[in-house]
Image 1 (cartoon, one colour):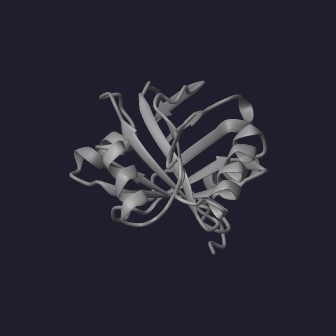
Image 2 (tube, rainbow, N blue to C red; image 1 turned 90 degrees about the vertical axis):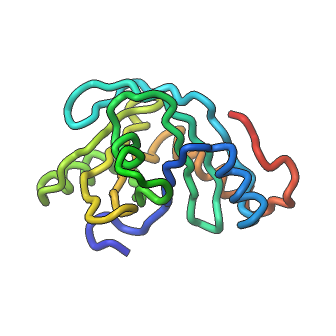
Length: 174
């Protein structure tokens, strides 16, 4: 439990091959089903304060209450995902903390001296997210995500379905 952000809700893995990563999680780890979005549509995205347009695929599944996110960037647009891969890393890149009062948590982080690495919005104002530049070593980036709208309902649906998953239909395109 973080005194600043609360409980970790998601571990985010940046991968070069999202299909291979989903296969590993399904066949080796027994985690699924995966909700796969081949091309995420972002309302806006900024990397280190400048507009950018990364093309990403994501897959989401739950292991208990912990959501697992797989991210594959499909272009060379500036992002913290690209920085992570360019540094020779692949795997756990961030831990995400979720909030229904996103702006208050965002403002608190900035007041404490956290610096935004990249941020964006998916599906309207209640779909905001920010990654703070906290990587002391690979896998320690902090993300905060607004779950007060449709994204929160979608995440809850994924968690509920994972709780009774019988191994069938392991990859579900969204």
